[in-house]
Image (cartoon, rainbow, N blue to C red):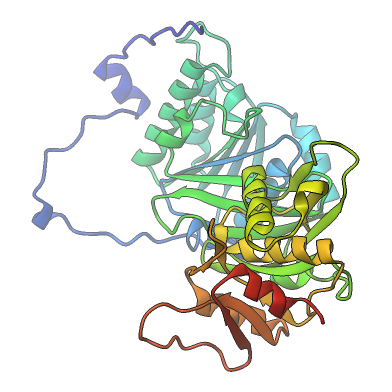
Amino acid sequence: MVEEVIAPAKTIAAQSRSGIGRLSRAPQRLSDIQAEQFNRYPLPISEFSRVLGGGVVPSSLVLLGGDPGIGKSTLLLQAAALFANTQGPVLYISGEESVQQIKMRAERMDLKSDRLLLVTETNIDVMIQHIEQTKPLLVIVDSIQTTYTDDLKSAAGSVSQVRECATRLQELAKVGQTTIFLVGHVTKEGTIAGPRVLEHIVDTVLQLQGDPFHRYRLLRGIKNRFGATSEVGVFEMIDKGMAEVTNPSEAFLAERQVNASGSSIAVTMEGTRPLLVEVQALATASAFSNPRRTANGIDHNRLLLLTAVLTKRVKLHLNEKDVFVNVIGGLQIDEPAADLSIAVAIASSAKDRAVNADMAFVGEIGLSGEIRAVSHLETRLREAAKLGFRRCVIPLPIGKRKPQYPKEIKTIECRTLREAIDSALVR
């Protein structure tokens, strides 16, 4: 149980003096309203800009969440310095670090800018005064959980404090041309702390994901009022900060061993971008009465489903084997189109037969052992052909229309999982 204190309502005069919460205009007819095009500010970091929908939208409120130490502050400081050098003044408000600490990190990343302003502050009223005095094009608040207002008696980071401070920043952004980025903490369950209060207030929700022990980071768009959702930008954590990975599929496959059993290539879609990732599986004799099922990078329940289908429909004796599945690079695969690649990798390890090195896999597996169709198949095949794969196992197309597949890659159409495994393994 959390006590929530309602903030005292401000008078209209006080709101007018502060420049926030002014009276709304009279209602207008839809046909009389002139549509205005958003003039986005281009961001020098192309991966970041693409996830935002093509750039920074003026008067918008953006929330960036992620696990501690994943690189949120590093990415935003890097973006703030580049934005200040190319577009206009930027105000970086930190509630967790001093300006000297931020300066040390900027020097390590070799960032220099005369239009990047730094300040350490946690009081929302003082923050708003700084913003109104400096009039920056971009404001970064790191983090919203450390921000508080004197109007509430609850501690900073509580639901009432987070909601009140975020609402005031939203009102400030909407009445001017300032774009505000908020950094949000993540709970143990992996959701942005609030709970979900911030996601309803802001215009865009971004989440920085990745394994802290791997160098790759994924910037994923969860909500975007000014662009497509589910877009993904790939970064690599280096000494100088976040480096863009322009060809993530090639990076994820760089250390692949082509002749090893239990390895297959899945063609997944992250937003509108196709990604080729390596899926590794290991099936070994179990020393326990209940065999283990360990999944890293895929859903554990999905692994249980695929092992059950392989045992029942393909007659693989996995009930006596421990099965381990790992997605290389610290990636998390959620879409069902990777089912076929996971199942082929498990079968390859169980039979101790390698998968054909020039073959990729796309398809969802049903409980009857059938391979079901997936979306964006032509886009996936073009990406696989670009990286040198010459064959791809796909579901048997449904309908009379013959799909137009790329000529650079040969498609092997299979209806069942047994057919796909027979085509995939080296004889």
